[in-house]
Length: 236
Ligand SMILES: C[S@@+](CC[C@H](N)C(=O)[O-])C[C@H]1O[C@@H](n2cnc3c(N)ncnc32)[C@H](O)[C@@H]1O
Image 1: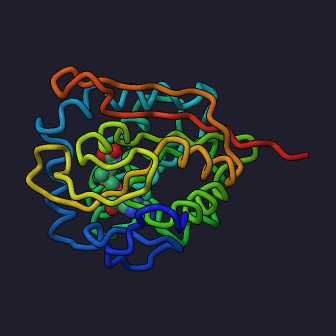
Image 2: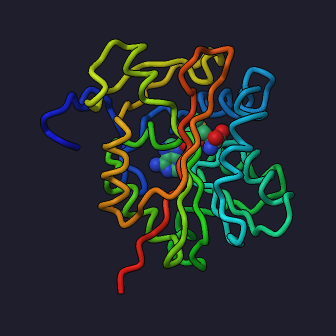
């Protein structure tokens, strides 16, 4: 993380998968409550609109797709049932992985990630704002992508978080927010400007190729989600 920005040193993080992860995702009770809220009517915008936007950013010819940070596995299941895709889920939380397996989808263990065949596309849907060392994380996840493959991300719009917390947009800072806006579960998240995210992907070997800015009209005029497709740079 840059030294001239407000950093997240206040978070007590635990080390996992060579990244630092926000501790709530290692709290089994928290994870179970989140897994239940994730596919409830409280998450209607995510389920009805954002999933479709993310789905549309997955290249049409992608066959092996990994939903990384899959939560309860609903999006992995959507991919698997859509046809033509071999969908896999992975989540850092062992409890979440077990919950996802109830859907009868393929859920990988951490040790599998580096041993199975690489993926045409990896989806990181609502995961990046929990990752402290995002540079290391993207380099690591990039290793699981086939040459010339794709990463699709979905993040909360950082323009909204800067305005909501009255912080300078062009800084990296942590904030406390309620998951889903109405799940009754608070969590620490990390704001990064889009230019910082673009830098991290570029240095990890990926360039942006498509972007969607999805507005939730019930939650104001600014887009709620920023969804970006990145392609791996092929170096000769
Ligand atoms: C807000 S949920 C999003 C779940 C799902 N992708 C969705 O869009 O509904 C964030 C998920 O990322 C997982 N997660 C957090 N840090 C992770 C990491 N370093 N590696 C893999 N999964 C992680 C959490 O356990 C949690 O299930």
